[in-house]
Amino acid sequence: MTPAALAPPIHRPIAAALWMVGSIMSFTAMAVAGRAIAGQHDTFEIMLWRSVVGFLLVLAVAGAAGRLGEIQTARLGQHGLRNIVHFSGQNLWFWSLTQIPLAQLFALEFTSPIWVLLLSPLVLGERLTLMRVFAAALGFTGAMIVARPDFSDPNPAIVAAAASAICFAGSVMMTKKLTRGESLVSILFWLTLMQTGLGLLAAGHDGRIALPTLTSLPWLCVIGAGGLVAHLCLTKALSLASASVVVPIDFVRLPLIAVVGMLFYGEGFDIWVLIGGAVIFLGNGLNIRSENRRHAIARNVTKS
Image (cartoon, rainbow, N blue to C red; front, side, top):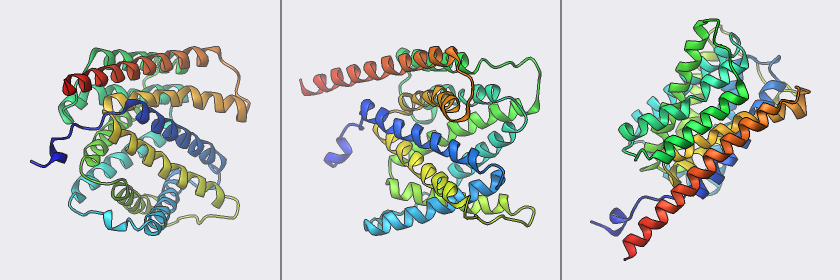
């Protein structure tokens, strides 16, 4: 066996957490931009133009860096399955957005890390530790404190929102598997290309696709660039640490979005956002600290 084959898997939870901060900030920028043009383009059109902008950026940046040769075709089936699952999750999420209160939608979306935690030992062979379970439980509790959903009125959209969370979890785990054998350039190339094709089919189902206008184009560029950077950061984070460590960090997005709503859209201040956010940060902080300790002990044992 080669030395590379014998090398232990990369495990850098702090670096992964920092990359996840970039992903969360980028997704937040996307949400702000999406809200700004919601009246000019429908959901499918926004998803289409987001993917087009992302694809052009991947070609431009990878081409300028001389990295287009990293694009592989050996795992097209995995890329296709991952993007279909992710695209399905997006559409279920956006449909639910128009049917149920935001608190319910976000509460159900943020069950996704729980699914990753439960399924990653089976799908990815990752170790399920007590601290990882505790961190995910704290994160979910914090999300519930922020959202405080009311599920007393049954609605099919609740099922759709729950299904979208499972789709997002599946997409994350498939991305993690892809990082074991493919570069970021290859993953992002197939992501944006396939999402463009799927977006074109969805947006053109009625025979009409609204072109960008002078007012919507800058926002669409923000959405496209934000989506690309978010997936780049998420993919990089997954290459540096276990999915069950990385994904619970995404709980931070919920209180951050709530704060953005207060600052930019005049939404009322809610003390529960701060309390829920503190619980989420506590869970992630304890988890990252535990992972660092565990990895340091493993390194010392290996050296001795």
